[in-house]
Amino acid sequence: MRNPLRSEAEAFRFLLVVIGGAVAIAVASWLNTWLGLAVAVVVVVLLVRWVRGGSGSAPR
Amino acid sequence: MAVHAEHLDHGHHEGHPPEPHYSSRVTPAVLGMFLFIGSEIMLFGAFFTAYFFVRVANGTPWPTPPFELPVYVAFINTCILVTSSFTIHWATSSIKKGNVWGLRAGLLLTFLMGLTFLITQVVEYLRIGFNTSDGAFPTIFFCLTGLHGAHVFVGLSILLFMTIRAFRGHFSAEHHHGVEIGGIYWHFVDVMWIVVYLTVYIL
Image (cartoon, rainbow over all chains, first blue to last red; front, side, top):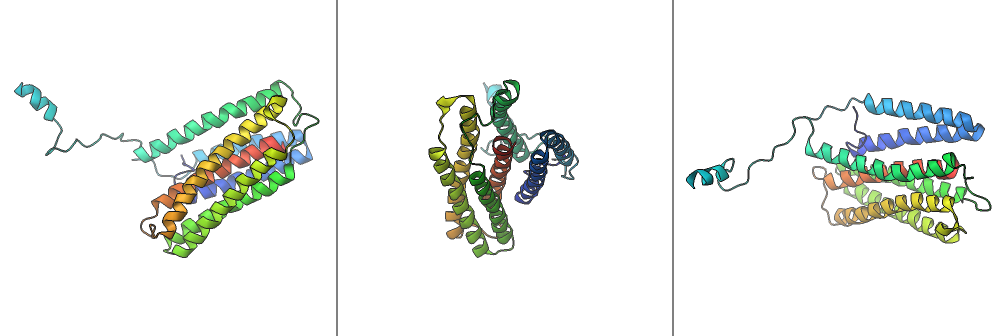
């Protein structure tokens, strides 16, 4: 599991991922509200998978 | 009595307190960060729950007519805050390479942009044309944006001390933990604003 706030560089990377997701949701919701909702669900699932599948070393 | 004294001395070495026992699975720093993230999720989660209840379950129009949200001013403000994350990343990257002037310039720019964000938000509050007494929509709007504003204020306080310390030469390529921690907090504040901006202003 990846801790997105482990270091400043990791937090910055997490911010960039969130910005990308937010832009996708904003554009989709501008086209259609339900499309925006669908994209939001997909983005949240991808974000959770990104955090869970991180390569952060297990705490010792 | 002697047995009792011996019992009290157990684990003490030459008058020093015993070594603290840490969990073998989670280090104190990681545990502290998890507790911090958990408490923040609960805090913001409570306000977002109120937001979704008002907007989705209760069906309150967002924004409730005749009120309007200054979406474009908030967008410019969002750009300023996002840019400030880039400058603090530049500051941290600079000090890791031993570039003290890069650190100072980065921190100063970040502080000024954070201050601009907060002042713009205060001006927005003064000119927005509604108040918390005008219904559920304004109440949730002020609670969510105000909670985030409070976090920005804390971040600015941290940034101020970081900047002062940077100009006094307290940080180097080997010792820059204070910059690292402040940077993590600032990115966290930025992430929270993107979520708040998306839900309150855009959706």
